[in-house]
Image (cartoon, rainbow, N blue to C red; front, side, top):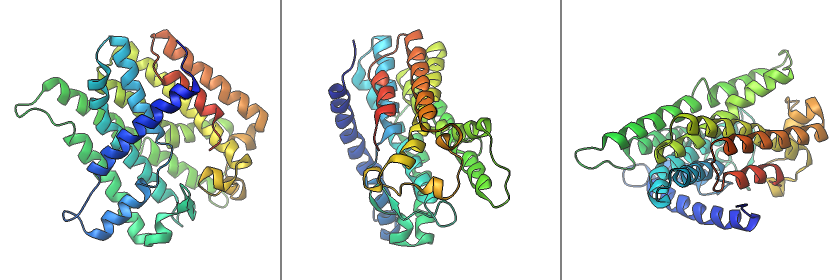
Length: 315
């Protein structure tokens, strides 16, 4: 069965409400934390955003439940803490990316960036808090029964490790380091392969971890998990290419962030290497490869529609 755009929008809206409610419950609060760090940490999270990573985790859990013919609601409940943790990690990365020492941006998700509102020092601490709280959530939620549940605990440990590796030096942090290095005066220009490797770490690693996290928590293993990882790798590439295209063609009011900054900073992008039309074609081929990975293991749900949305989005 083909999922329509309306079906996807309805599903995403419902899951966003679920994630936002869970984030409201799980985010740091007084009196356990000082008010200023609570306010600074919550500021960027509640600003909204696409919630792509948590949606991908929940869609993967839903697809696995459908493939295994088990009840979807418990699978989604098991994946929800990981979905929230992924959003906190993603938001922390945005808070730090926007700092003057990084991309030096003043607009994010349609609002002034955290360091503009709270100052650089507090923005750094807010990002640190979000990253750390993500791993608190992964370790604590969902809670095992008093005597423990070995199957649930094993899934949580695998999920925690997968997300930590994707967020760390071999993943997102490493990719950001390569991005910063490439932007330094006198740095050797990246070639197309190096650009792909950089974004596979900076953007793709956490997207792949999101698909894996939801799948693991829902009970996926072996070929099914491999197919979802392949799907997410292609999806991450398509997402980054479209991001680069939108930086050229989009408007700040639609993107919720400053348009044209990559070109102004001389950053390597897919349109800069291949041009806009070839970049669009590469994104489309990446989506087709993502869909083929799903078909191989008969995985469906909202995942195919999410892949198609990635290349058709305008923000």
